[in-house]
Length: 450
Image (cartoon, rainbow, N blue to C red; front, side):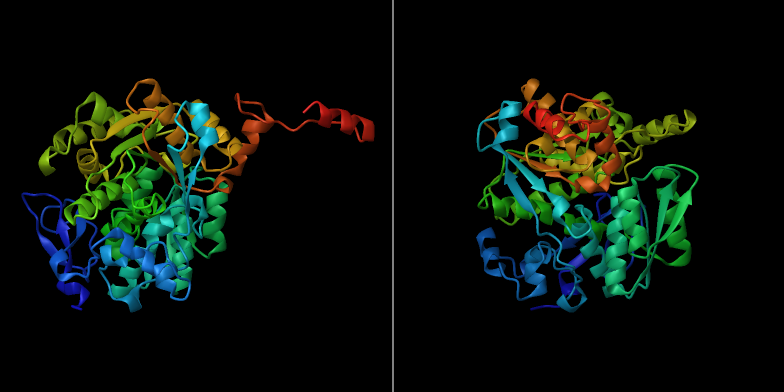
């Protein structure tokens, strides 16, 4: 087999530039034009399987890379040699068929599936991308890493930095992180800097710091992060018997997931491993709905790789002039300047996608409803079900369609919100504790009334 550098490279997504760079270079933007980069492959030189079913040969625990739900699919993201690949057992996730929740939503039995990424080692989908980013970091000899984070990225980075012996620094905004997530980063030894600002401020500063100090940036500007996140879609296909669903529903945020999903399906279609791509629905919180405004209200599109950059800049300038800062209970998607906007537009084009926003109240209710039907999740995850309700009501999604909703994180990522929702009886799915006297008969009476 050829060396990885013979067939894997970095490529600018701007078709007017299309510059290419070696995988051994540390880049987060194209040095030629400043646009974003993809990890690209010369597929003819790679050992690509003839069928997705061939991956079943790697259902084993004896080889750590085969056990990984990311590196099990390494033939489709093989940008570094195996001895550089890092794994802590990521990707052991389930796609749960949930007929009880389907019935609640008016969806046909057997049609609703929940991809539960909370089973990853750090409790969120980020581990899929972080294992790939740190594998690249090992390839290039990096010794220090950093990220801006609303929570999940910091937890995942700190876990992988610890496992590879790298130092790491987390940039968080003032009071803009769930403690369940921050506690993980602290526990794993991350150096945490709290910036007087929001995530967008942290994102700007961490890029400048990494560029000046030569630190490896692991935010999803890093194209290798998104390579790992492609495998969430591979596992959905795997658990559906290699059948393509009709819809993928995913929260918005920094738009790394949606961007990687579009890339994954485009590559699978190009390789003849699937015969069609699913449709994609991206759900934002109303308090952080940049994509909704730009895509639905301003008609921003991929436009064959030439989206209207002036339109985006005008929108961002207005946010700055108004001193706008996003606000939503779904802290993981509390982002107003998503760094993967352009790649997300490409994914929407590939997957004939739709974009909507939902209010916080509906997100919290959906979170409780998901929990009631058998799976807990973080608030941002629940945006999928909150959005799906609207898509069904508007006739965009058919009740007989096969739907896969990505639940991005574990419920203990933000336990305070969950407890307060139930304790304070804030929604129709609230389940508050009942106070009873310390008396046997009173306790039995209360149990009978439940």
